[in-house]
Each structure stands twice: as C-alpha cells, then as structure tokens.
Amino acid sequence: MRRRDFLALGLAGLGAAGVAPGRAWAQAVTRTKLPNGFTVLVRENPTAPVVALSLIVRLGTRWETRDDAGIANLLQFMVVRGTEKLDGAQIVEAADRMGGSIDAWGDVDASEITATALSRHAAEILDLVADVALTPTLPSGTTEAVRDFILNQIRNRADKPYDVAVDKFKRGRLTPDALSQIIDRTILPELQSIQGRVKALRDVPREQAPLVAAASEYCKLREESWRRRSEALHKRNMKMLRDAELSERAALDAFQRMRAS
Image (tube, rainbow, N blue to C red):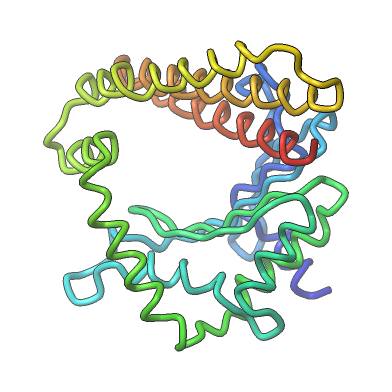
C-alpha cells in the first residue's frame, strides 16, 4: 500500500481516465503541489475507459557531462527490465493483461515512466509503475543488450528526417519554420494516406466495426496533433504546442480503445 500511496500522491503529470475525442484541448487540468515537493496534474474524462500515467523526474541530458553522457536514457531503459518482484517479461505481461503498456525513457530535460491501462485497472497499473520506480534491480545481465539497442537507435536516427531535424532544431541550427515545413511535407501526408486507407475499407464485418471506427479516430487525432504542432512552431506559440500534446494524448486514448475492441 505504501508504494501506491507514493504514486497516487506523487505522480508528476498524471492523465486520468483519458481525453474526449476532438475536445482534448478543452479538458480542465487540476494542479496540486504536495508537501513532499511533487506536482500532480490530473485531467479526467469519464467517457474514455482508459487511464494514462506519467511519472516525470528532472533527470536528462541537459545535466549530463561528457563522462556520463547517455546515463539518463540508459537508466530509464533499465528500470523496466526488472524489479525485486518481477523480471522484464513479467512487467510487460502485467501491463498487457490490463489492456495497456508500460515504458520509460530519458530526454533533454526530464526522464519519464509512462503507463496505460483500462480504467478498471487504475489501482493495479499504479502499483506496477510504483514497483518499477521504487524497486528496480537494474539486472546486470541485460545491460549490454540495452546498450546495444540504444546504440542501434542512435545509428538509425540518421535515417529519420524529422528526428534529424529535431536534433538540429535543439542545437539552434534549424528554425521553427523549417521544422514546421518538414512536418507539412513528410509526416502529415503519410498520416493522411493512412487515414484514407482506413476510410476506404468496405463491407467490414459488424463485429470489426468498432475496431475500424477506433482506428479512424486514432488516425484523425494523430493528424490533428501534428497539424497543431506544425502551426505552433510556425507561430512560435507555446500554448498551441501544449494543445498539440493534449491531442496526442487523445490519440493514445483512441489507440487504447482500439486495443480493447
């Protein structure tokens, strides 16, 4: 019970019960600062039967040196590889049984453990995130495999135009307008093509109709979030960037409904 209390009162960036499709940016967010220093953010919508959690700490590449570069990302990959109670496969299986997933990664300004589940498993997914956050074993037998995986990601990143552009943008070598144009010319057309293929489906069996509807909604919300991100970069508008993130979370909710169908 102690671990669940820790997360229930200490999650930074908690999105509870999902986001209403098409109205993600209109949802109210409550903010609570706790005596222990944690900030809890909650956005709730009872119409979406999913819960999305995000535990964020201020640990990222911004504070790394040449000697420990990459340690935050390596650590985040390792925490989901085993705890005192579960090994890596059992962690994945536990989240999957709840109709969701769990993952972790490090970024420039923060490191994050994220998890999703059907809302009826909210308490259980909190327990799982708490277990990963508080009792990771960092199993030595998986360190080399994780290190090789990260190195492959770094090598493959050069083949992804948008990721390369984001790296240049963060270093001040690319303007917001240029990054916005890359979204408009590469990502949006691809999303529109996928959405068109979903809409073109005909004679769908009745039992598969909810799955197709959820897939269509997911594609629509993904396109909306990237369109908003492009517009926000063009206008240098941080509020619009936050709206784009909320739309992205709405797409995640649609994806979870698609999995549950």
